Image (cartoon, rainbow, N blue to C red; front, top):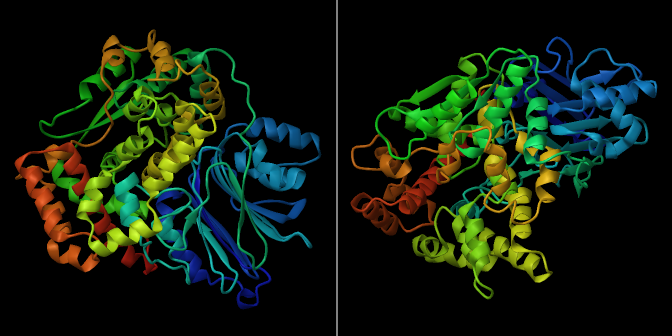
Length: 605
């Protein structure tokens, strides 16, 4: 697990020289928190390739960028884990390749030499890979990410000089000279409509993210050409519990300490139970579990549920209690690490939780992310399935994704911004169109929704958050539900089994307390509505960010109507109003933070 970076303009006249070491050092410093164990950058005429390493697999080997003596023209860097690396190494060794260590990424130059750009089709794991092919006549940069988009690559192409730059994190990418940082005009609307950036766009004009399951090809001086691959081929064996058990056991193996995140819900509970079972059967030390809560008495606490899972599975349980007075600081830090706005308050909890994981000596954490998307667990899915024929289920579905429903957004916008969004179209419009188009060609609603969720929503909203905020503390988050075998198994289940996570509830009957199986669904987050009450530590932070002077300067929302929304929430607390206010505040903070990202300094955790 690492952070990677690079630039490529080989053959472009303006970039014939080697990239400046000071500039590359600035880029690396912005994401060094994710790779504190080792740093290296290689450069040549018009190119650079670097890595900040978090040593997990073969900690004493695997120096990046990867080079093999018999393949001097192929360089590689890897962020992530390749779980089938032992199998691939045996195959490649049989073809004459030799490797100096057991690190998973060491085999990448040989894999590329054998299969060319199709090398990524052979990888099973979570990965963001950059291959630099410097062999005469085939010079190119190849970038690839895993099928689910668990590991990101952010990139910028300059059409004027033909250069392409990439990094694992947006703040690092912005430390490259020449990378634009102007916010997209639709960034606020996209945030309110989807709670995050949508599709391959980021909130910054000129900065994109490679979509899940994609490979990008960059020839000297040319723009990246992005192609989607077919899914990694795998044949799951057994029922849902068997398939998940196999993946949990695979991911629980590491040469560094491993723990589990236990929210108190079904998904993380299943992962915890199976990981604890694996520890017992292999005579390993007891599994440690982590749960985050906030000091004081707050509604919707899941701490008791998490404790019941820990008791049932016999783990060493850590209940991490965060002081609410720290929320303002946590907000600034999460916005800075993410590099773009995310309207889910869960970001603060995620950051604080992985901080505790690292401070307790763990480098790998198993999580339950991805289950709702694959097994139909969201309330919006059930509502869409229950909607009668002819009902606008797609519009209701899009509204359920939002931080502020369409009518509220249009009410808050200035006339000019409302007209701009109407003219350009909203991310919500594109979501509705995708869902309706799928149904129009005969695809059932659940398949259409799970395809949308896993293709766009999951990587942008959840996986990017988990990646950035776990790596902010040099913790590798592993997600069994996002592995190819589980994905293939889930997509092959009958509609009834993947509606309302029925298959997962059946899998948990023998593993989890009955209270976990009976409880209503609840997201792991902070009690936002209660924390925006008079006298709460969060209210003044939000009030300051939404001051009329700031909002008028932005020119996108009407300050008077935002103030009325805040007043309404204080008089009649509402989760929906609190969510809209939070999203607006996050956007305002992000516009402030992003202006400082051009200063080439480190971004400390």
